[in-house]
Length: 316
Image 1 (cartoon, helix red, strand yellow):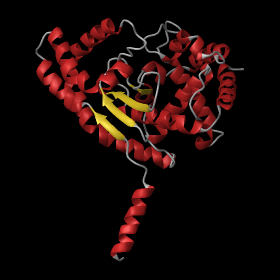
Image 2 (cartoon, helix red, strand yellow):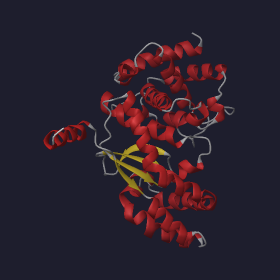
Image 3 (cartoon, helix red, strand yellow):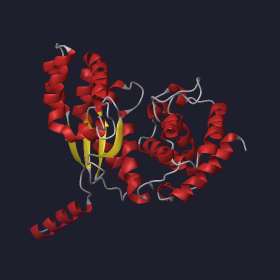
Image 4 (cartoon, rainbow, N blue to C red):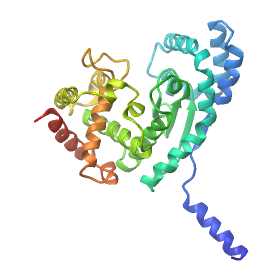
């Protein structure tokens, strides 16, 4: 192959490859902070945190972590949550540091595997390997009033989750990015059924991207992973009457199914039951439909499938 042909081949190969995500890794800030802060009082730690961690990434903390535009009590909340987090850092710091150092490698593997299932997937957005006591991972915006999406992961909170696999969580959130692209953004008046479908599909795809993973690694809670069929049937009966309700009009309803800190649906059941129910609905749908087809369903089609599955699970 002559030089011109080789150059052309390399150029075409590079063109065919989707661009790699831009990763903002806060590992260096974490290491600098904890090396200086671990033997200090909490007030001294908080000052070092503001200077060394939040300062270089203020928009991330303002909009993704503390959500200052929505939480008038963010200062009190920040102080309370960081005090709790810092108490765990002596035990978790080595694990957090390792997760930061491995992040690009693990994420890159997930992106490559994801594209084997969805060849059209592109992740042209900023991805943060960050710190936060308020979430594990999510797609959000760092601009007031919304803007370009970013994908954010809280490496310290992920390290504190003993059961859940970080790789599965990364794949879960990558699917949310992809789903937003092919299905379109959720309507402002999104129904509960659409939230159930979004989360169920993300869990299903995360498991497919990581074959051999267990439901415990996927869901992070033994009582969700090993839920009895009678409890799943009860959840289906409970969800069916509220499936059409709009999330924006009843946020507490959404929280009861998808928020780890919300009151339980039933005292003997764990939090986050919506994730388990959504996963089983997506698994059932995959018995009859192609994955690429399911990913592109409209909200109306997704609602139809959710309602049909709820009826089956409820025993009706």
